[in-house]
Image (cartoon, rainbow, N blue to C red; front, side, top):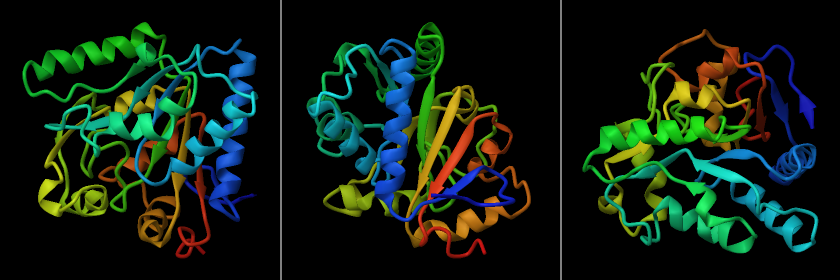
Amino acid sequence: MKLLPDTAIPTYLVESQREANEALALEISQLLGAQAGKATFGLATGSSPIGLYSELVRLHRAGALSLKDVATFNLDEYMGLTPDHPASYRAFMSEHLFAETDIDLAKTHFPPSDSSGLEAACTNWEGSIQAAEGIDWQLLGVGRNGHIGFNEPGSPFDSRTRRIELAESTREANARFFESMDEVPHYAVTMGVGTILEARRLRVLAFGDTKAHILERVLHGEDDKSIPLNALRGHPDAALYIDAAAAARIG
């Protein structure tokens, strides 16, 4: 693992995704050890975090990690999908982490996804995070257009949890999780950029050549506030982990 020089966000180049996953799993384990097993985690979905969740499951099965006292808040959820829909993020988290560990499902939280009373529900969601004394450790992926959570380009850096219309590039990238493009929702509810920035630690995974262009723009480019990832520039404890394919245009 190599810390790259002169990047707008502290960035580590890893030899493999496994190296990043093991480093972050160790960090999670150490955080839990320092806090007597209690912490609040912000969780992401998509392809990038699957390896990390697999490593956490491995550690749990080996008796080296317990999640029974943690609370979790997921970044986002599609609107219009039932919790048991195979492409919902509740189903994703159950498959890759929750059902495979000792996590208490009563302490897992997802943004509201029902259009009825949505504004009040989003306000209550923000209140739930505050009641948990904030997020200790937040995991993020990066969209090819620089989105974090489902905060698409142009999202204000002080935005809060809300409904958002998904960009076509986001829908296309996520179509692989659905039977057809027509089934991909047009709307989701996401933690806002401002909500994300309140987490005490931010850890970002970006793998593959589809992320190379946006990383070039962010890590060595101007502070373009239309790109949500750029919001992390001023965070006191943020780190980005990328592989060689994602780093191809950085130089």
